[in-house]
Length: 448
Image 1 (spheres, one colour):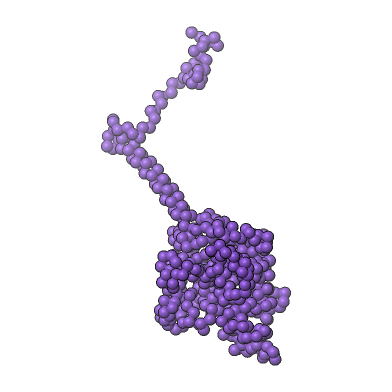
Image 2: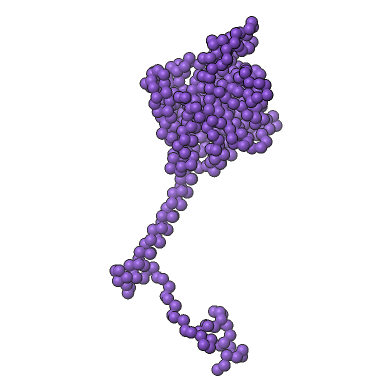
């Protein structure tokens, strides 16, 4: 039978064209090898094909199990961290009511985060710090400004006893609080984070983009996650209120001791909240420095405990209330060099009518807020840096070291040891230069 077009058997069938071996002069191909059967058991010796097949099968199954286990563990860890973070929808809902009166967001990507350290007594192990009466106050409040280019970050402490105007706020019982001129940390006690944010925005003219609330337990966990922070003490400390007993000298503080160190007032310094804020700033600077120097943010094994401690201790706005949102924010901050992570206290002085309260020093505070609000740089110099002394002119306040500064309307300022009022910009700088305030950087830490 010829291979003519009329021959149906010569046409390509449903399985494809005919076998090339059927062509005239074609060489026969060897028979195809059977498919590899990893489950075959018969016809093989212990050292022959059966052994190889069994090894391949077990290796494939082992690798598959390992990949699935790793993926599952990663998913579980991610879900755990993501689920740790508590959201704060009530704050968002309350702020939305006052959107028209809030400052506008900064252009270019600069962000402002309000960090609130709560002295809440409820919760695990927090009752030891005082009676839980159902309220909480902002034991520490820091306005953190991250520059748009992420080349610097400035953390400004707001004194808890600063006299400020608190606007009308919705209280936890649903009632409205009247506007009043009162100490700052009452805003958080009256009406929580929303009231605190609006108070800061009205005082500074700076929009708060995000907020984070951390309680006592959360602070201790984060310090422990980096294996403690080094401090150096000139003299021993014995403070029952802060639950702190430490020898003099260089040491590493963890957990309870670290919390006592940043909370102590009467046993460290002169007992003022100003010096306590400076100590908190120095401690946070040392904490940031350790995170950078140990490569925590680039080392998964070190990063996970820190993320677990942080996420399980945070209450945040909804934009940060996910591991992805928090990670993206931290990733943008991790490239900032430690000498550009700055800490300072808002310019303040003793309140003229009550020495146990504070008030803003103007125009210094306005200058600081204006610089940050326009994403312009500020610099800090150490609180121990010497100032150039000059004799005080009549009508001017003179510090202990003779530094000349204008005095407040009434009442003395609380001075640094060198006589310069705290937070006051450096008078030796020309007006066109970047304003300089007293503070510290993460590069300095505590003991430099």
